[in-house]
Image 1 (tube, rainbow, N blue to C red):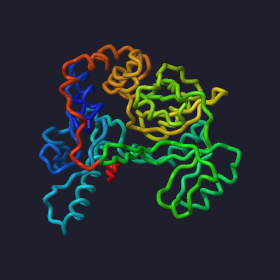
Image 2: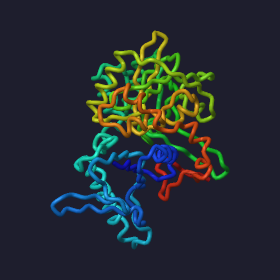
Image 3: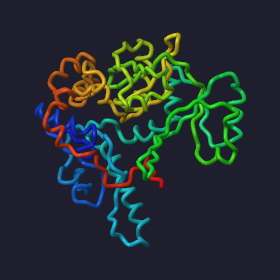
Image 4: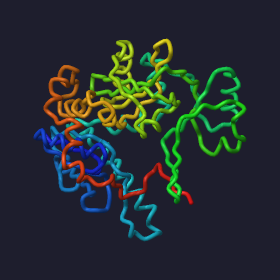
Length: 364
């Protein structure tokens, strides 16, 4: 069995996890996604059997494929300009042919590409979460000024937030940056109708929260961690990046855990990072899931979490892994703290991407 990771080898999660897997005796192959460079080539062969070759490695039955963060398809930059759109389309369609094929090859895929493409849609997340029995704030997703204004007018006196569908960073040439983050909005703060059509957004009743929770789904097991932000910011991610969030283990209420597992089954996923807001009555409110969300930062903030080891125990175990199996096997793998103390950490260059970053704009 090999662990096949779809990401650059020096991706900020791939590098430490590849190191830990190899220290534990596992073979690891990394493929960054379809591109024109030889290491990014792919070949699908149909000759009585079906074979998929990524770079120089041919995927084998029994492998575990982790679709971590493959790059967008990258056609050869030297293609003639009149042919560029054709080449981009062919690369895009071939990339999809590769990604969807994993599910038919007899390998374990985390998460199946068809499921990941579906569940990354915020609307489907809320529908499935509600159907699974989770608390979901009243929400509207729209680019219609009339619908947005009506939503806020009907809820005057109820606090409302606005958030983006996808993270984005604006980087100025002078080094300054601005990032998307959740913010509170009132009816009298809405811009003109035309501005409201510039970009769709998510408008949602605010959960007045005591704290946030990040839950990590690992197969049939969930681990939850409360996030305490001393500044009480609405969006904890900015303070997290500055080291201003305290991470503590918290028991997941049985009814919430049951709902999460029902949600995961309906979505067809086995791994993901889920965000909850906890109100002053102790109710858990589902906000969103990122099926390939970052999780090693939990270890960085709290060494007792051991989420790196738990994830690798899950990754290398059969499907349907229980909490007992994860916790019995996690000691087979080095921890995040071990990786940080290793010389290998210093040898890893800054995270690399040969293609354009989809969530970055550079402004003068």
